[in-house]
Amino acid sequence: MTGISRTSADLDPRRRRILFRAWHRGIREMDLILGQFAEAELATLSDAELDELETIMREEDNDLVRWFTGEKPLPERYATALFARIAAYRPDFDPVQQETE
Image: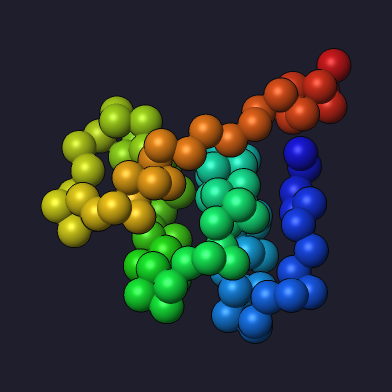
C-alpha cells in the first residue's frame, strides 16, 4: 500500500482533510500507521475522537513513533483509549517491502 486506497467521496470535508493528513506525514512509518488507521476507522469516529485524533496528529512524527513503539514514555495526556487503539493498530508493511524488491 503506497497511499490512500479508500475513497474519500463518502466522507465529510473534515474527515477528508484528516485522511489526507494521515497519509502525508513526513515519515513513512507514520504515513503507514496513521494513514491505514484512518482508512480503517475514520468513518466511525465520533466528533470527540476526531478532535483527539487531530490533537495527536499535531505532534512531531519522531515523538509519535517513539510513543507508539514504547521507546519513549507516553505523556499522560495521551493515555487514552483512542491512542491505545492507534498504538495497537498494526499496519500492513508487506506491500511497501514488495515495491522495493
